[in-house]
Image 1 (spheres, one colour):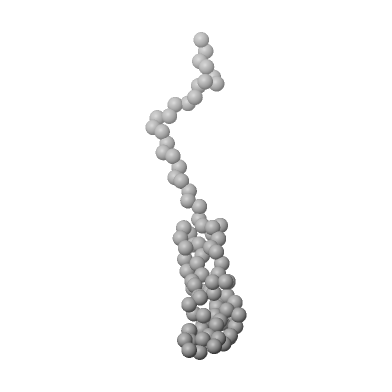
Image 2 (cartoon, helix red, strand yellow):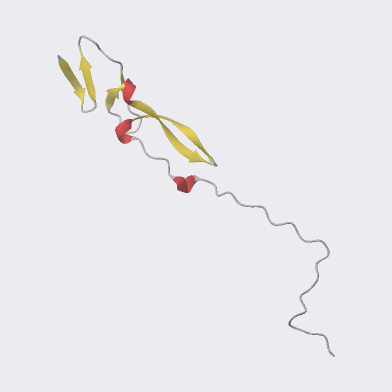
Length: 90
């Protein structure tokens, strides 16, 4: 027989499962339904420290990624100015 302890928790008297509390919603849910809440920091995904029910988990926002900037090109050796605008006097 199923006994409900909340919207996201179902407990079977013959085979009880562990129950935990979601860090975002505060609701009781099965411990097996909790996942780590991840977030972008720098260029990698990092765990925020929250255990969240799958229903309330946020997708990591790519706006938090740091853009990868390409290095400046190397300067050329012994550059010469462009004289096409001012031709030499002949």
